[in-house]
Image 1 (cartoon, helix red, strand yellow):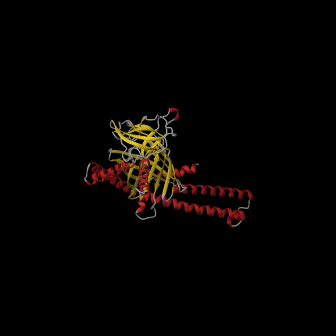
Image 2 (tube, helix red, strand yellow):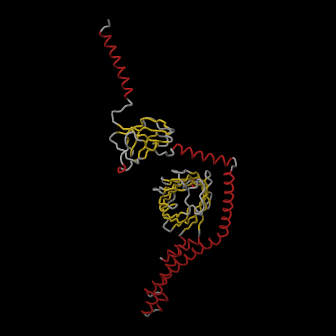
Image 3 (cartoon, one colour):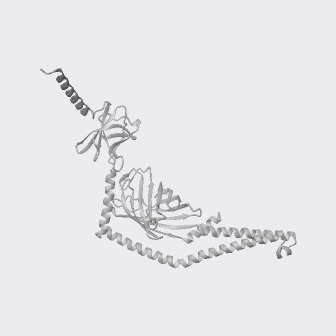
Length: 430
C-alpha cells in the first residue's frame, strides 16, 4: 500500500503533465469567436498558417488553413466575429518588407454591397510578390549581361545603337566646334557692349552733375534755364535708354535653353521609345521649365505584344534645382506626377557623373492598355552616367509596379544659344 506522500507526488506529476498538454494544445486556440471566409488564389507562396489577417493595417483574424481544391489554392481566413467584411472586399498576399513575413491583406468593400457570409468563397488578387519582382529584375539584368557577353541579338542591337550614338556624338562635337568661334565672339561682344554701356551711363551721370552745378564747359555755355532743362531731359532719357539696353543684354546672357533627347530600349519586349523636350533655365538660378513629347511614335500603328507605352504624350513640368538635386511636378508623360533627380556626389571627382532619377506618376491609373489592365501608379527609376556635357547612358526600371521592364537609356543634351537669345528678348518685351 502506497504511502500518502507517494500518492501526493504521483498526483502532482500527473497534474503538471495534464497542465502541460493542455497548454500545448490550447496555445493555438483562441477564445475569440470567429467566422470563416474562403479566399481563392493561384499562388500563395510563403504564406504560413496562423499568419495575421489585416484590415487597414489592424489585425482582424488569422489564416486558419491553406488547402488545394480543384487546382485552386483556398486560404481559410478566420475573421473576428465583430469585424464585418462587405462584398467587393479585396484580398491579397503581401510582405511586411523586402525580407519580412507575409500576411493576408484585406481592403474593405462597400457597405451598400452587403456582407460576406460565413463560409462564403471569394476571389483573391494574385499580385506579383516583391521577392518575385526582385528576382525578375535580377534575371533581366543577367540576360542583358549574358546577351552582351555572348554577342546575342540584343548585344548586336546595342552595339549598333552605340555606334550610331558615337557617330551622332562625333557630329555634335564637330558642329559645336564649328560654332564655338561664333559663340565665343557673341559672348565677347556682349561683354564688350556691357562695358561700353557702363561708361556711357557714367558719363551721362557726369553731364547731369555738371548741368546742375553749372560746372565745366557745358555748364558755363548753357545759361538759358529753358535750354538747360531741355538738355537735362535729353540726357535723362538717354540714360534710361542705356539702362534698358544694359538690362536687355544682361537677360540675353542669363537665359539657358537645352534640347534634351532620351532613347529607351527594353530588351525583354524589344520595344524602343524616344522623348524630346526643351528645358528652360531662367535667370533666377533655381527654377526651370520642361516642355516636350514623350514616347514619340505613330499612334495608328498596331502595338506589338508586350508594348504598353502610350504614344505622343505631353510632358510639361515646373521644377526647382540646386547643386545636388532637382524636383519637378506637372504632366509627366501625359499624367500628373512628380519627378526627382539626385546628385549626392556633385562635389566628388568622377562620382559627380552619376545621377539617380525617380518618377512617380498616374496615381489613379485604372485602364486597359493593349489588352492588359493597369490599376497601380507608374513608378519609374534609374541611374545615369554622363560621359560629357552632351551624352550620357543609364539603366532604368520602367513601370516597376506593373510591367517592371528593364530598359537601357541614352541621352543627348545641348544648349541652344539662338532660343536663349529669343527668350531674353521675350522677357524684355514684358
